[in-house]
Length: 596
Image 1: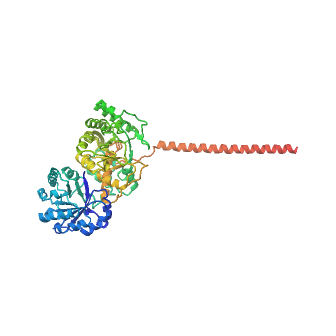
Image 2: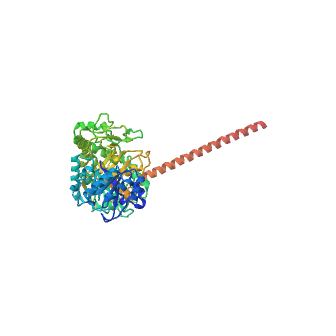
Image 3: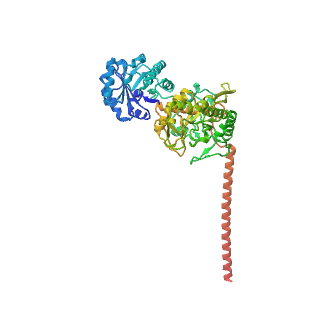
């Protein structure tokens, strides 16, 4: 499992406790100690480590970039360090061994560090004593440097030695780690990633710009097109309610983002048609077709039929104004008692993946964005909150349970119509696998929707997925979970209007804004190429309001109602006057008779 160790070197030192609390869902707090001699910079020392120790329960990973570390390792252990790493270049081999022994004598974990120009072989004399080996992927001393990709071979070599000797030793990389480099570092064998600038970004993204763009302008554009950056520069992050509805209350809809011209989108559940659940969890089909359970389609072994099924649902969605569909289900029939067999095709990953790809392609051609679900080894409907922990080997996870998702997401294709830069109608093929719903389970104790190794390293990294990842339904979360969800690579929470009203604990720091901006982009990319923007002219904004004839009809109904009410009042008043006149007439007659 990949671990994250944010470096406080990039934090705000005037608000260090606050910034440490913001990384409460990380695995380590990485503390860079520099003496101005071993590296050309001075950072923090023993008093700061002592002060930050009470502010967090996370282990302190203290990286000593100092000469002759043997003189100080005991003091850092006493200050609260849980793991102390020392540079092999900082002293003689004998003194490095002595430093490691002193750390162990204090009951703490010890490790070594290799600078970029130091060969992997320099670690061999110490490897059996180490709980961690840290490979620097930048020259130590300053944050914000670019990742040195040629260090990956050193990481692979060390991973081979660690595995070959059967050592319980973590392999950490530090320097230039971010969304683009983390997956390749992990693939090379690193299991602890130090991220400083990528976590505590020094500058926030541009916001509130006037680029003159709206979402309709991006239809048919590549995910990496520079126009996306210009569009997203218009985000303001000023309206928390808009943000919550757009990202964190996304059950069967996503909210509008006015700054970029993104309208509300509507989604439905599946996969046996466009279904809508009630609060009791029952799914209802109304006004659309109900289709046989997924195993019936799988039993046909008919890819053309699967595509036709997707096309039919896509056409129904056009008629109903539905933009997204939580289907197809690509989990496997691990057990006949898992509660979802009717939603999943088969016990065979190849068959499920091929059928799923055809459903995605057919629905995608009609403009319906489809969320393949439930990513991960989802195999039970019991114990969903908290999540069921599923334990399995990585080989089984990759080759069996993730395989149908990988096949469908990589091979499904749709045709998108749009208006090109010259104002002419155009068509292009795009990936139909651009929407994922994560499973409501945990892999080895880590919630799937907040699993960095799965979502960022495998799905977005190895598979090259570009698009929107949504959690499964989660009604009782908290802000810290959302912080972790965003950092893991998930974009939105499937929460309802009767669930908890949630926002991340941090929405205004530079790091938070980068993450929120990325999530808005991923959702918008999918919807721009869905039926939500199908036929919408560039430069157009979509506003939902009643048609003029509906307004006039409502006004006529109101006027007619008022007229009827007025007539009723008039008739009632007239009747009352008639009754009163009748009573007076009878009284006069009686008086006249008495006089006679």
